[in-house]
Image (cartoon, rainbow, N blue to C red; front, side, top):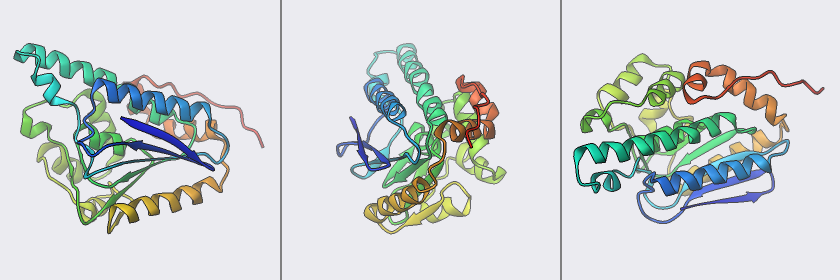
Length: 238
């Protein structure tokens, strides 16, 4: 489902396999476990890099499992389970005491898009893969924390409109222009390599992780409120 590997100061969280990395309850639980492990092992200079194998970063929630419930009401109940289960993943990324980098090597849709957006830095390949919020095309409303995250993370009003109300599929260079993505790269390999370079640059700063996390949370107070993350004032250590 996913693995966590530590190489020096860098943690690599990888969605494994060549499938769509649908965010099932099992994968969500695996992500939470990996993030908890990274948090417990964090030191000054730690950085998290999240990536995936195959042509998908993540294609969102496991809608196949939801639709297999047998009725519309049962399908919505299963979807609601996944929506509720994924909220702590966003909360965990907001609270993680280290910089976070998403190296998106393929398609990222719906909750998969949000997974990437929940990182501090978002890198993407330009030659293949799109960002896509499919809810408007599927006739599904956005969960409250999805909306809060896009309001917090995408500064362009027209960009948010095109992503959320138009269901626009964005390639890497388009996403860079809208300020969603930090940089676009020519292949999956070069995307990960750029993420590692960035991670190494950030690791050299040897920041206090608890202070870093509190500053991050203070930047997104409304999102933190929706996902249930409190903002504290850590004691400074000079």
